[in-house]
Length: 178
Image 1 (cartoon, rainbow, N blue to C red):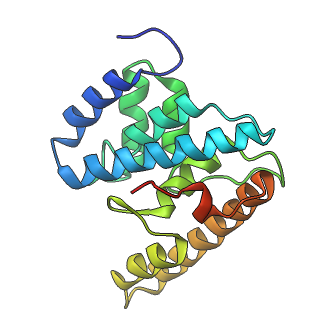
Image 2: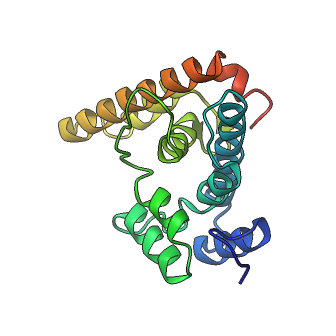
């Protein structure tokens, strides 16, 4: 095990492959979320909103290691705590429903949440496209539709914070990824 607040890239890959059971859709999605989270963190840091890009890469890589299990965010966080990575676990635990910080600065948890919501599978899709696709999975479930709408509003708020902090549109910030 590497020493530090979070596992290095090689160890993240090992954990991801082991825990995701080799499911290519989870592997591809997780790697893309890691890349998006890292890019957003780097851009925010350059703009004077310091966010740890390496921690976010690790959290992005590992956020869905328990996908398919009940309460997968909490289950993934439990795995990461047992492995000795509480800082990563803290971010992963809230990647499905992050508490919003104030107007500024953008938090690491918000970056991970947004990175996950900007991606659909192994593609950067943008919020509108991603949430339309999610909503189509639950057309007759009003509770799910309300939850989806609430998550979209939260993601839109975070996206506005990121764009305001960096002075750039999210499409520019994620260009070339997925």
